[in-house]
Image 1 (cartoon, protein in one colour):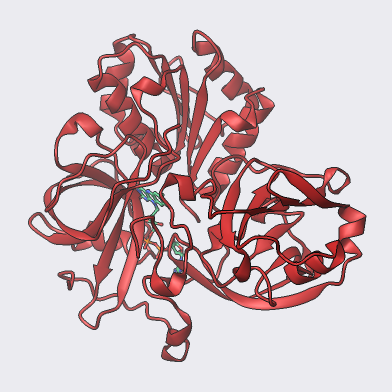
Image 2: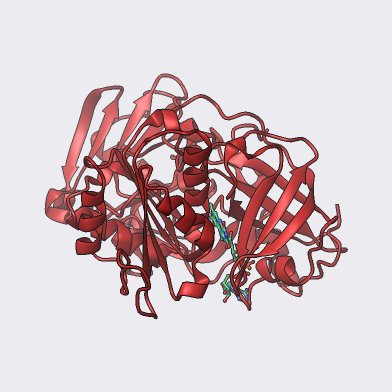
Length: 248
Length: 203
Ligand SMILES: Cc1cc2nc3c(=O)[nH]c(=O)nc-3n(C[C@H](O)[C@H](O)[C@H](O)COP(=O)(O)OP(=O)(O)OC[C@H]3O[C@@H](n4cnc5c(N)ncnc54)[C@H](O)[C@@H]3O)c2cc1C
């Protein structure tokens, strides 16, 4: 784990360059920061919205794009209907808008190809976003490092990045995708239709050529707690499990 | 910079404005954040050690620690992820009382709080003494749950809440200000919410 001080990351403006609906509740926003930065897969940015009277709301969003993807960054934001910031992005934000953000932030929930593997990624809902950056980073690095992603979504249509993930899975190049749908039957032979449990984690670990060097778990707090417990029950040492909790 | 089209109706009541540090919002719940799985520490296995550098000064088991004088603190807490929660009621042992039981004055100006899961965080010693901080044992009158750092967590309410180390099992006095777990990963060495010292590059 690298422990160098992180580079400065002051507030800056970034322009929205593209908006694309990913699922009924998740939309991706691409930002071009006025001062471009290089991030590591798994890091996030903080976003700050300011009302005319000076009131500010601030939230964290993981970066979905790979470090190699270029100067712009992709954020994938899930709409919480009674939320303050996510509905703003879904209902108001438009291409060309300037948004204040700072980053890259976070020095714990990161993975670089050079850190090695195998790696087990476990994501729930929008918790897949930083894991997607890791998967994309792996792909763009042309490496054979074994990576398995267990991605829990409610239904097939809420599997964020679905086509891209299945396309990568089909390459059979050391990346393995396991989907588990909690409210619909499984669609692919390798998939599940239940909440994550120890047996599922054990089977995910068995898909890797040897026990994972690290596991990364991201999602809502309840998801992360349950998945981390399941991993520990599947004999994964707690010290090898890194978590990122989205709060509520 | 005003954000086009952002007119949030969610404002803290003006009489509480002065209690919310810059960039924070008021939270009614109690979100959980941590770097790894939640350790389940049984009170039978629990201990608390006061150290000067690597050298232990005094160690307490759960019963001994609970027999120390207990105090209550009700404080606003501020998480670096931007939520602030008002009037959180804690009970535990003030750091002053831990030092008094060990019969020492703080030997150095800096302290590392150590945790069962290997986590650590640095706090200047002066921010722990004179009634500023405690090792909390109860929250809202009940044992602290493991996801909130139980059986015992540090409580340094005037700094961002990551300084209030969960699952605390010791304090180590250090000769210099040594960064802890999060501080090595880009978080601020001091963490004053009123000066918005979130990340290492913040002044
Ligand atoms: C490191 C990190 C990375 C993250 N990455 C992502 C990501 O990649 N994608 C993503 O979608 N999210 C991500 N999140 C979560 C994100 O930061 C926000 O928490 C999320 O978008 C909700 O914000 P909001 O303003 O829309 O909702 P909020 O206004 O924060 O409300 C959240 C929920 O709490 C309730 N609530 C809380 N307070 C109130 C109140 N006063 N009034 C009404 N309701 C309230 C609401 O019911 C709502 O559903 C990340 C979080 C962290 C910490």
